[in-house]
Amino acid sequence: MNETKNIMIVGVGGQGSLLASRIIGNAVLLKGYDVKVSEVHGMSQRGGSVVTYVRYGEKVWSPVICRGEADVIMSFELLEAARWLPYLKKEGIIVVNTQKINPMPVITGALDYPDQLAEKIKDKGVKLVAADTLQLAKEAGNERTSNVALIGLMGKYLGLDIETLKESVKISVPAKFLEVNLKAFELGYNYEK
Image (cartoon, rainbow, N blue to C red; front, side, top):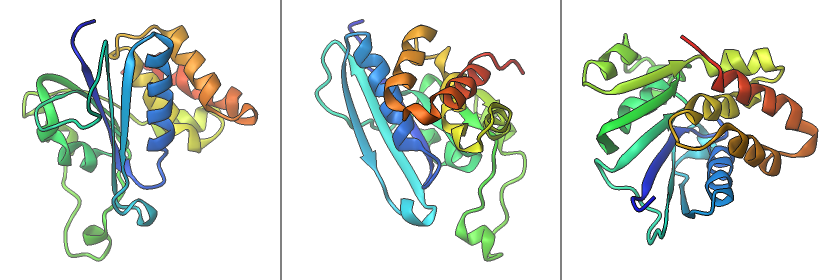
């Protein structure tokens, strides 16, 4: 692979985006690629927007992804997917958890959460793969594994085999949580709408 692949992981603080970036980064390292990961925390401690960049290829010089460069945007929340849409390549894909987390202006009543957001994203000509990964995580046995279920959902679009991704989950997750995380990953990977 001569071309650098660009993945943006976007969400809200506390959703597990840093673990997700570690799992994806470890997976591409296992395949022998050079990888750069950059974490931008923002207001993550208060539920604010969080973005992580993962870039991999033969040789990667910078961890930063500019507008129009992301091959994949993996989003933990619909509004965050819409917010980062300008960073997606023309032929890119958004993989999103359909969970809605109200930002502060919605909580205070100053704004309404946008209606039919997934449809509005699709109307822009974007390939969108969506699932309620929070529900998949609950089925796995722990709702905190929603991030790993989302990685599973995205796994088919990374060009990495399932065994490499599962191996990365094994080396990235504490042993006492491994079984439930692997189950969440498989539920996401095998999800059919």
